[in-house]
Length: 551
Image 1: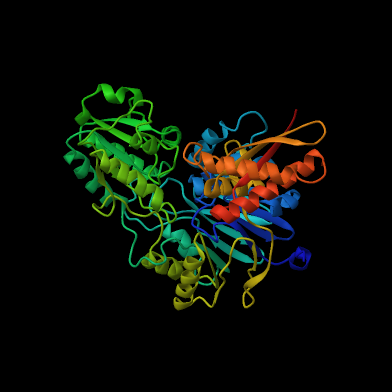
Image 2 (image 1 turned 45 degrees about the vertical axis):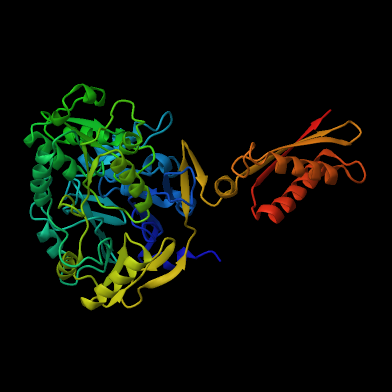
């Protein structure tokens, strides 16, 4: 049944379309007086259930239906899971996009790769500034994260204030950007905040998330101890860590090569915005092999085992320029995102088999999270004092634990949302009151395809059960003359040749029996015969394609 939004026109609504079933792929909608405000529009990693796909984005069909009432998209910060979907989805929205200078510079580099067609004009916002998008009056609040200009958004309306935290942590030594604006958070406290929509990533982690300053000390020491070539991989969008690695390499007297397009993008945006000095110089990755191994550090993408990332190609010996040798060191200055463990482990094993030393955050203190642990969440709730807690940026287990923590900290109402949930933000009545369509769309090369469509289902069958291609020769009078089969991914053409011949004879017999039939009927008979034979003999359900050739 269609939800009647007109009944709630004068009340505040929150509708997440991404990031409230998973960590990443954030897309949040706030509704008031018949208008909508979008906060963030990010990507997520695809799992093995989507063969051939690396990236997914939220299904935005709901807000496309209401695009005339969509006032704008506010980007909290320049991480892919908060803005990476803009190049893929914006042309369906065509709304104003608001971002601070660094975030705008980073997004502009991404948008330049969109190809021909209309692109958004980014409306600049000052970090910590204000912008009016009536009926929403926004005040940005600077918070520490692993990238500059992370902005919480205080959404002021006549019905109350919503504090949308985005990603954040409390770090006294963030290295890039200022410390969190505690005064602004406290200003909104003391009962002035109706609801806080807050990061849940590290809700199971006790204490504090740790400081980037400490990571720099440990990385500098570790890189200085590497005897041969050093390779460090991290999230390209973690500019604080990128800056740390650059400084550590310089301290060790090594020249730096960047490997990975997204690293070049973030470094360019950081230089444009003044967050990286222009004297930070890099060699081309084609120069790496011509220099002494002990004089080079390669900073590369691929810390999550992404198939086309630089580290994956380096580990597989497929990179166009860079080759590793026994005695070299690869440092993972990152954590494993849930779901990526098997891909990362494959890379680790391949490196170790090649005589490469692999170092992770389990071995040395070389990574801290950009998200709040329980101690930081407690401090945030003490400052903001919301009447309603709405956990986001997490899997259901994170959201549930966050809701329990909020209640423990004295918040009277905590709503566990999910992608597509319509959450009423009303004191004393906060609840999920309905749902809209939500889901995921796969980025397949340059195309957007449904994750539950025929293309993906066929790929799964091809991966799991292989395929059978049948060529059927039929005479003009309808008589089946010959059947030839190929079964890639199901049978070996040489080792299983006799079995294929038996199947060919059986299918020819079945299709050739009885009265003469049309081409489509021949195809269906052959398909049914093969399906039955293969199920009985191999208990498999491959993709079956039949071609009829008239002779």
